[in-house]
Amino acid sequence: GGGGGGGGGNSVNKVLASIAIKPVDNKLAVGKSQQFTATSTYADGTTSSDSGLPVIWSSSSTSVATITSKGMATAVAVGKTTITATLGEISGTTTLEVPLPPPITLNSIKITPATPTIAINTAQQFTATGAYSDGTTKVLTSGVTWNSSDTSKATITTDGKANAVAAGTTVIKATSGSISGTTNLSVSSATITSITLIPSNPTIAKGTTKKFDVTGTLSDGTTQDLSSSVTWSSSSSSVATITPDGIASAIAAGSTSITAAIGSISATTTLNVSSATLVSITVVSIPDIASGTIQLSAIGTFSDNTTQDLTSQVTWSLPSGTIASITQDGKLTAVASGTIPINATLGGVTGSQSVNVSPVVVTATGTGTWEGTYSIYDSIDPTQIGTYTFKLVLTQSGTSVTGTSSLRYATNGQLQADGLFLRGDMTGSRMDFTYSYNDPKFSREMVNMGTATISDTSMTGDVIENYNGGYNCSYTFSLKKL
Image (cartoon, rainbow, N blue to C red; front, side, top):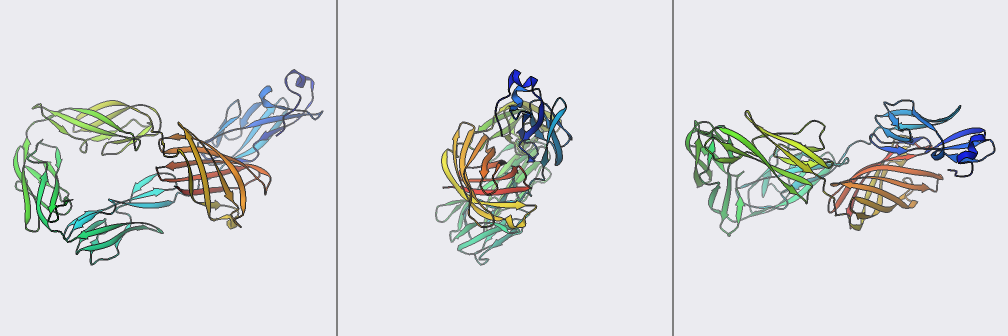
C-alpha cells in the first residue's frame, strides 16, 4: 500500500490517474465485515489515501455484500460482487467473494454420566452429546450406535440404556460415522437392600404432572439412582397415571398409591390430586455463571393458594429474532447483552418476566498455550487438503483476546508463517476473531476470519481464509489447553 504526498489541498490541482483498492480480490464470510481502503495515484506519481478524498463506494450486488460510505463492506449472502471506489471520472474496482462456508462436521461425542458404577440387575441411562465444527452441540442419544465392549458385564440398548449383568467393567461407546465417544461402566457385586421414593406423599393439581425419582441403598453402603431401573405403577389410573420414566399425570381429584419395584423390593408413596385450578404463573431466574446460561423456573399458584413447580410442564417462548435461545426445560442462553421478555404458558395461563442477559466472559483462555490440529478444505487444490499440527498462545483481558501462532505448509509440513497475529472478542464461550499475517512463499498479505467455541479445556472452530489473488480455502481446528 502506498502512503505518500499529494494530500489535502495540493491534490485538488493534480490530474488523477488511477484508484487502487485494498484488499484485492478479497473473501469474506457471511455476516462478517471488512474495511476497504482506496489509494489515488496522480499523473505526477504521487498518491493519496481515501481518508482525505471524497471517494464514493459502491457494491455491484448489494444482495451479496453491502458497503458504507466509509468503505466498510458486510457480507450478506454467498456470491460475488464488485467493489468500486469512484472519484470524479476515475474508478477503481476489486472483487469481493462471499464463499460457501466450510462443511459443518461432527468433531466429538461426549457420553454422560462419566464412569458411573451401578449394581447387578440395575440400569443406567446414558446421553450422547455431539460437538460440531460450527461450535454448536446436539443431543445424539437416539442417533448414535451404542456398544458395550463386554456384554457379559452389561448390555446396552439402541437408545443408550445400559443393563448390568455381572460384576466387572465394560467400555460404553457411542459412534456416529467415524466419530465416537467412550466411558467406563463399572458393575459392582453389591445388592439392593432398600429403595426410597422421592418426593414423599406430594399433592398436585389436576392437569399437572409430578416426576418421581428412586434412590436405592446397596449392601456396601452406597446409594444409586434407580429411577430407570424400577417398574412403576399407580393403584388408581383414574386419579393419576405414571409413565415408565416415573412421571405421574394427574387426571382427577383423589388419591392413588405410586409404587416402584425392582425384583422383590418395592416402595410406595401416596399421590394426592387436588381439584384446584391454576390462577397464575411466576417466572424466576438464577444465573449460571459457569456455563453462561440462566435456569428459569415457573412457579404456579392455584385457587387453593398452594404453589407448584411447573418448570418442566410449561411451554417456554421468546420473541422472534431475540438475542437468546431457550430450551423446553427452561435453560436460557444469551448470545448478546440485553433485556428479554420471556413467557411461560400452561393451559390458558401465561406468566411473563423480563430477564437481563449478558453472555459470560470465558476466563478459561487467560494466558496459555493451546495445541491441536487444523484440517484444510481447499476447493481448487486438493493437495492442500489434510490435517496438520497447530499451536496458539492466547492472552485475554476482559472480552478482548489476542494471540500468536504458527502455520505450516499443507503439502510439505515446512513452516509457512510464524508470529501470526490474532485479535478477537469473546461473547460467552464464543470468540469471533481475525488472523493477519504475510505468507513468505507467495509474498502476499492474508486475512483470516474465524469463530471459535472455548471451554475450560478445549477449543473448536472454523476459519475462512481471505487473501489477494487467492481461492476458496478454509480451516477447521480442534485444540486442547496445555
